[in-house]
Image 1 (cartoon, one colour):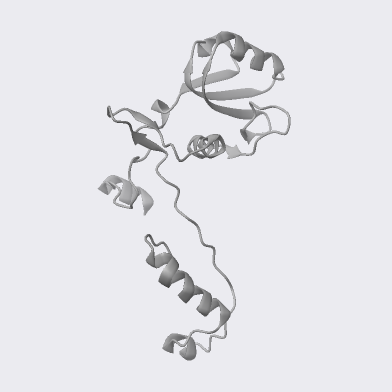
Image 2 (tube, helix red, strand yellow):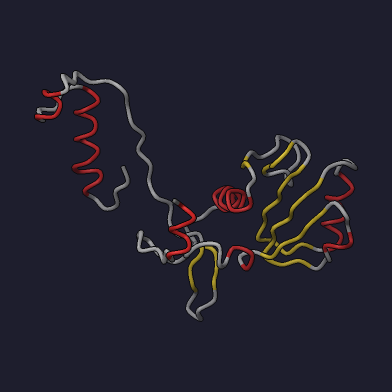
Length: 175
């Protein structure tokens, strides 16, 4: 079940709780001899990751902290968000040797070189940075992408509802 709006808290959540607890008085529950059980999860929809600033440029939503931003970019790139205990640049992974680092800081050639020197020879790293000075070809096991540019076009941003632009081609793919 997917719902938006205050009625989700004021109505839907309460009704689902009654059904799970076996305390609803609905005819269907009586017909099915439902006495309760199972459960449900309640999630809040995150705000749009990107929004436009006063000049119309795409920027990161101010409601996102560093961990939320890293988790969102990991999701978009197919990585599991799980920050490493000691290596700050290992914020997520796709395999045991393929990592991702997301930052809004300006990355210099020296900084990227420092990260590279700490990598094992068989490791690879995707760096998603707001701005940087190094070239991706400087290191064979490091790929650098510019955020938020890399995210644009993947989904709709700046909306707080479900009025998504779904094309017939996308609908056919989902079937």
